[in-house]
Image (cartoon, rainbow, N blue to C red):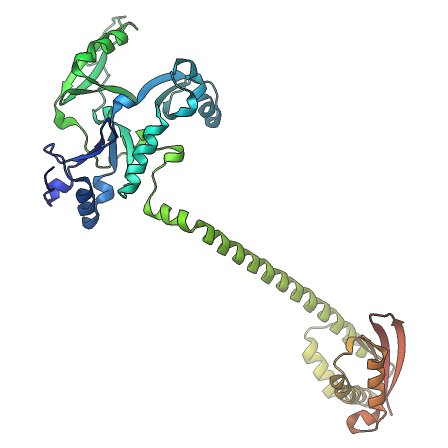
Amino acid sequence: MVPLEVTALALNNLTARFSVTGELIIEDAKGQVQDTEACVAQLTQHGNLKSVLGLVWLPSQLVVLTEVFVPGKRKSDWMAALPYSLEESLSEPVENLHFVALHRNKEGMVSVAILAHQWMKQWVSTLQALGLNHVQLVPECFRVPVADYAPLVETDSTEPAPLIWNVIADGDVLHIRTGPYSGFSVNAPCLNPFIQAAQQGGGKVSLNHLTDNHLLNSQLDANQSISSLTLRTDDYQAQSKQLKYWQDWRWPAVLVGLILILLLVATWQKTQTLAEQTQQYQVQTEKLFKEMFPDVKRIVNIKMQTQTRLNNQQGGGQKQSTSLVALLQAIEPLFKAEPNVTIQRIQWQDGHLVIVVTAAQTQQLQTIVNMSQQNRGASSAVAIELELKNVTPESVEGVFHVTAK
């Protein structure tokens, strides 16, 4: 191995690939093998790790690229049926194999990549150990450009169009691209059997040899045509750093989200309760206002209207209003002194107050009556009579009739 020269050219012309033995190899533009860990560290330091090493090439000898008809209209249906459409032609159980659908045409023909789970697990584990879990894994035969199948001159010939295979020699290995979603890698002496097998279908294979400078490196392709051929699907999907952080913190985040939802629900319930109470108070206030001032036909601002009526009453009305205010002022200290008595409703009827109350014990209601009879302070100006309405072991309901002495 040779040290990587820290130059823009070197750092942007790297190729990462797995060997058939599972070793991750990184080469520069001259084909020199670099120290993998040092190379990754330098790319990370320069901030271009993801763009320069976006693809890692896999040995095509370990991947089967084929085509099969799979019925079904919905993707979930034909994806589920895909492994079993190939089951009879495979030497291993489908449970041991990883299937990747690369493309499906309108006729239902699916271009599929097949390889062993053990290889995917080994490769992904190596990438994770090096901090390269973001990279895509693509068969090495796809480093070769796709051949142009459009005929240069239109003819009336009924003979099938030739099968044009682009071929690039990489040492002793030939990388061959037979179509947009097909190809293979093979040692040069073993190529003829592949040609003969292809020509049995009636077509004639035409080899188009390209130089090795046409081979793609490990940079992310701009149009995503190559990275879309990744074999990292299902349980092997590539992860960004942000996704990794999310997976590490997803359960705390879910817990926080649940707490926030509970708080929002509790706040909404409390708001609804307060709104209902406010509506009840409004109804009770308007009812009391109408009982006190039955001649008022329209309520606009109940506070201002009440204040105006109390300040501007004339004659008997003034006396009545003054009596009401005096009664309210007189009983206020009594109820403050006995907080266990709860006022449910106040009515003004024929010059006296009717106050409906509840308490836990009858004695608590009697206490207010007793305090009013002690002739001290403002309470000495009122007379209070208690009428019990409903008495249970848990509570007692009563009515205070308050009149001026």
